[in-house]
Amino acid sequence: EYGGIARVVPVFATFLIIVTLSSIGLPGTNGFVGEFLILLGAFKSKTVYAVLGAVGIILAAVNMLWMIQRVLFQEIKKEENKNLLDLNLREKITLIPIVLLIFWIGIYPQSFLSKIEPAVKNMLEYVNYKSEQMSSCEKKFDEICEAKDESTESLKFELRRCTEEAVLNLR
Figure 1 (tube, helix red, strand yellow):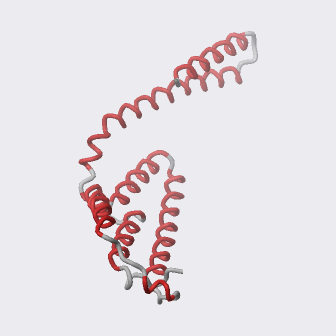
Figure 2 (cartoon, rainbow, N blue to C red):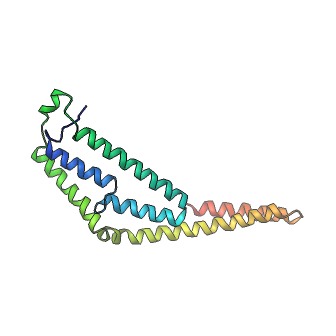
Figure 3 (cartoon, rainbow, N blue to C red):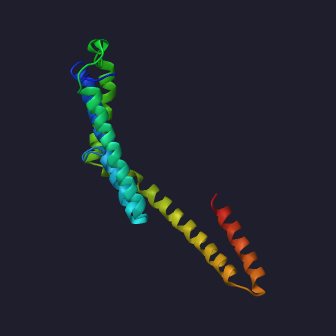
């Protein structure tokens, strides 16, 4: 429907291409930093999820580049698209800071990452603490499953107490 509008609205096309390249994770843009950090964490945690994520990123990039090609660079198919207005000054003033942030975060991410690092460390400590609590409950559960004598009731009680404590601490 909008094929070929890059010649008609070149400023809009430029902004659209920049934002799209950021969305697909082009190095030097904020999208690359985000995707890289997410995939890095995923590879450390669960490799299969990281591989699936990487495949998803590739498929999304192909889809977005195909969209750009169809919307901006094909022949104009509808006559009314020849009369589209390009971005006005207000729209340019709105988009310029966004584009600057796209490149700033992409080129110098540490200026943002250093600000969130303390909160991320606190969250990781919290998650690790809760994980340890839950694994102690899992050990008790395994003991109950293996036990076949009179101590089963006391282990069930201990598991119930452990689980209630873990649930209360989640709040």
